[in-house]
Length: 226
Image 1 (cartoon, one colour):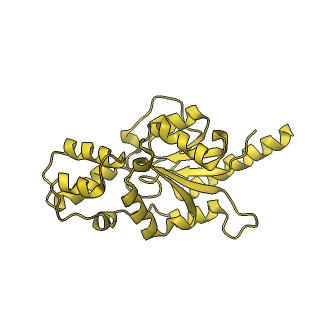
Image 2 (image 1 turned 180 degrees about the horizontal axis):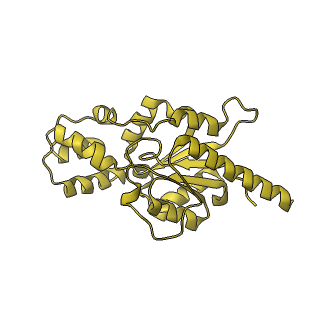
């Protein structure tokens, strides 16, 4: 059996507190900056910018938010409680031989993603960032998921994907990844009728414990098979 080597975390709703980033962060920010566009137009423009079809500067301009800037908008994001401690534990800070490799798979614009993660110092532990605007694919498009094991040179069975939307876990399961549902403010609004995730958690300490159980169980099974 394959041993867990990589943990891939979603950004909005897992690393950052607001899973409903458009409703809770982006739209309120745009309204404050003078945008009067209908919400459906905002969501369409957001999809384009997070697919890399347009720049963030063009996004603000198209929505009539002349006073908006990437830097100002990115200050609106907040960390989920306990994120830094959880990342340090998963990465194995202070442990001989280290811990698990950490990555992020997020539907976002690359410029925004870089600003927020550097603001919070998350690149210390998360080495690879797979951002939809650079991939040209948004979750739950299977292409977004296939990019991760390919770039990290690991089989999908050695990857654990953590996301707050059940529908975003389904393609990962189909690809052979392990899955954990992290309950956020947005989880209940996006139910999935497919197979249940392997684990469900609500806090960062619970997430660390769940990943450890997966890693330990897989390691024991591998040892028994040998």
